Length: 276
DNA sequence: CGTTGAACCTGTTTGC
DNA sequence: TGCAAACAGGTTCAAC
Image (cartoon, rainbow, N blue to C red; front, top):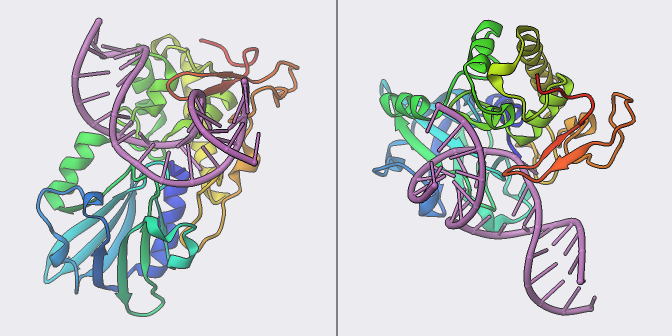
């Protein structure tokens, strides 16, 4: 279930184990999991992993060899994860990539993704930058309040689809969109350009609060999500509306949380969340 | 420009 | 119990 907080948790775990390591082998078990024009896999053995970072909901490992830098980008989709040990994956047949490393405090890496939404991409610097520009707007954790308010006020559509669109804002998915809108008292169908300044400012503050809290909590483990060492997140215990339909609103207004079956389910309190 | 629905996949839950 | 439908963290594309 990797949205921004889960991907950030994955990145932090990976950093602790692979930074400075030498990539020895890169084995692809399913060719169709790799989505890059020409096969760059032969380049990687012998390269050193010098950085791991998050790009939207993607994990990027920077690899350097003989003054040449390339990038292994992994899209996790709905069910993608990186594990330090194959035995942590509940279904070994869905491990699509195996990386062996050498160096201190390192371990193997196993890319597991049962539904196979999400791919691995192998880029050089210009390819990575083109990918970023093609796919991602400003990062939800990094965007300033002014930039965010400007984006929201120039959106004519509803805020729920706005949050899900990575071209507008990168990192938010269905769980966090619902939780953020509830905590900010904004209706999922509110139109961006109808929001008052105070509401969009509160939305920005709430968004970054929720994301930071979720990262600290290790992410949300609804079904599959685990960190690379197998540990679960516990931000699901702090969810207030996601999959809470029929339960009383946590704000104590005595209204029941409603679920709307849209493209992606929306959960909200019809009393607390206002359209403007 | 914005919305909607289907498609891509497998696994689990729900309902009859 | 058994089977089919519905649904799940995401993204892309076509059609309107």
